[in-house]
Image (tube, rainbow, N blue to C red; front, side, top):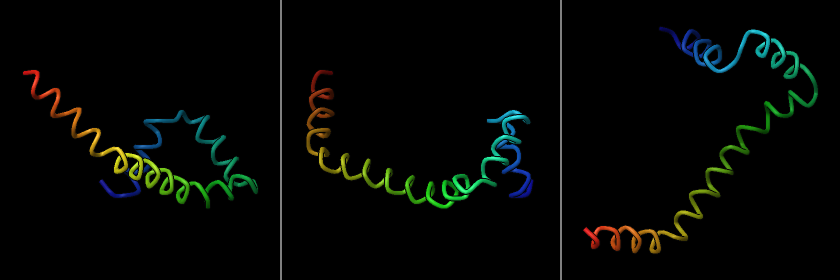
Length: 72
C-alpha cells in the first residue's frame, strides 16, 4: 500500500463518510485552518509535558516497581 492509501484507510477506519465530509468543511473555515496549523505543535507540547512529569517522578516510580518486585 502507498502512504496515501494507508492514510485513507486510517481515516476511514476512524470516521464515517459523513464525518469526513464535515471535517473537510471544518478545515476550510478560518478556525479549521488555524486548528490544522496549531494542533501538531500542541500535541508535541502535550507530549513534552507528559515526559517532564514522568521524569520528575521517575525515582518514585522506580521505588514502586521495586516494592512490587520484592513482594513476589
